[in-house]
Length: 238
Image 1 (cartoon, helix red, strand yellow):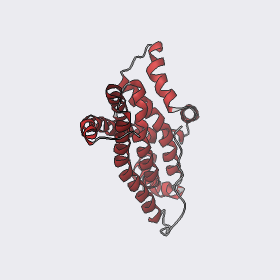
Image 2 (tube, rainbow, N blue to C red):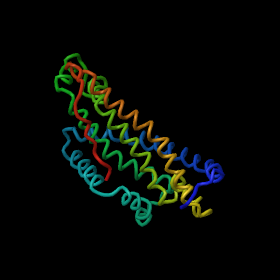
Image 3 (tube, helix red, strand yellow):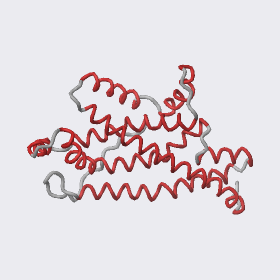
Image 4 (tube, rainbow, N blue to C red):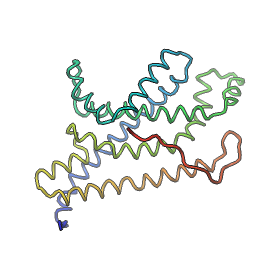
């Protein structure tokens, strides 16, 4: 039975924490890009311009219908044959941003669609144009609906960054792989990696669950506050 020496844990910890720091940074960068892009995609898919809707619908369905790892490989290994060579970090950020934009855009589109049409009519009756109504009335209400799923997707993204190890980005997982290759102490290293992932993910999972419960108790569109109900529907990452 393999054993874990405290001296090994202490020796590996600085490098693994540096990898975890890199993973957290990547998560926030990719999530920030994805949220902004997803809102734009969601709004564009609800526009009256049919060709734009068709193109973006095809994009969302293609991304959701193919594995994220394949998308990462395509950008990093196939793009150079098309004359586009990206550094590993740029390719990783681009691939995961494209992936999460597609999924989050569906969350935000559903959130916007959940807002009663009378909200838009009321805003426009006050003299606001379409974009002002979206910015000041519709999106703030929709954000409350989309917040719990967004928190869950961020939790998922933190773990999905481990995919970037396949293109040698030195996040937490790849740091563990390198340490294992140098020392052959895989049991100690990957046990420590798993513990670090859990320590970071568990509080965020608790926060996401709290947000989900909190949003259910708030009144929506003038309706009484709910005291129960089902979970928010999540779209799994493909």
